[in-house]
Amino acid sequence: MPKKTSHTIYAKGRGVEILPACKERKDAGGVVVSIEGRVRLRFFDFSDSSKPKKEINFFMTVVEANFLGHNILRIAQSKLKCKNKSEIHRSKTSSGVEFTSHVEVERYSDGEEGKYAVQVFRGGGHINVSMNEASFLFVGSFLQYMAMHQSYFEYLGAKKEEGEEVPVAEEETRAAS
Image (tube, rainbow, N blue to C red; front, side, top):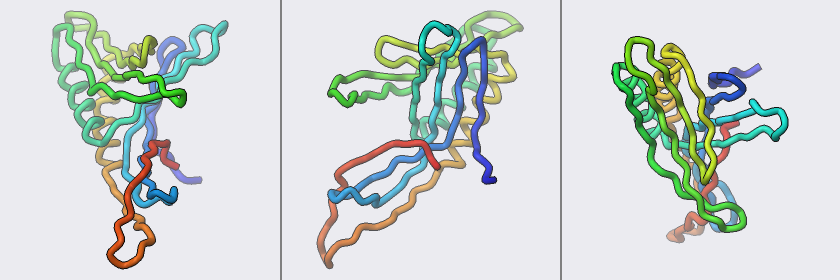
């Protein structure tokens, strides 16, 4: 059975899973011409059994994942409350409605016993995953590892006549298989 590089942190009916992902670029005919590594954070909330399970996926470039991991490690060293926000991602739903999403990492208590959280915001909703210092540090280190692990670009090429350029028409981000 092939190994899957991922890790999940659970906290009171919520969690965040760190997974490999990739972005495919397709030519005008729908043929995949290149694949580039990404990192996916899958936030989930199943704490309220009366509501359906809530899930928000946040895809990052390897540079964004590495920087977020670095910020987590920096926040963990602080003895004060502090917060850091990822770059804001703008997207559209299939019906054309535009929304934004971002991830925040924070230390939300002063003193020796730090309390930490990683949370995702999308549109009007969010999922907050609280954790202890050990889990917070692991998430930071694992994000940096995943950034290095997913640092690849595979050019598959496009069939074309001599001298003809094939335009890239579509990009798709998906979970890596």
